[in-house]
View 1: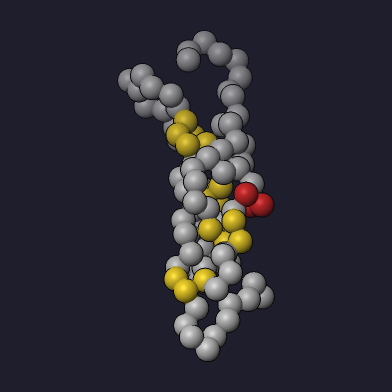
View 2: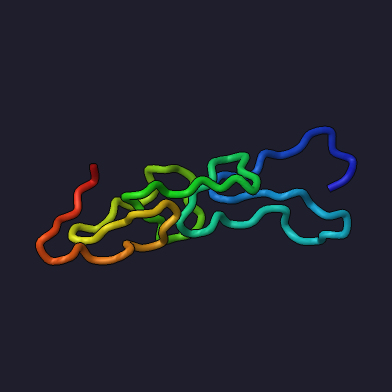
Length: 95
């Protein structure tokens, strides 16, 4: 919007990128699954940490990332689901 004296902060659960001059849509998009976007997020999405996953879009706090399910492992950041089951003879902990 032109002629404004202030800029709005990008809402939580969304990320905002610079708007092109001829862009006619919204200037924000929903935060992708596997990440969370606090208010004011640009292209610097924050990944759900290892040991957790984010199975839905629009998260805005780390505590919304789900702990990895029992008997499964989540070994990377930014996962949208558990990576797999623990092998027989092993167990997974949230160390």
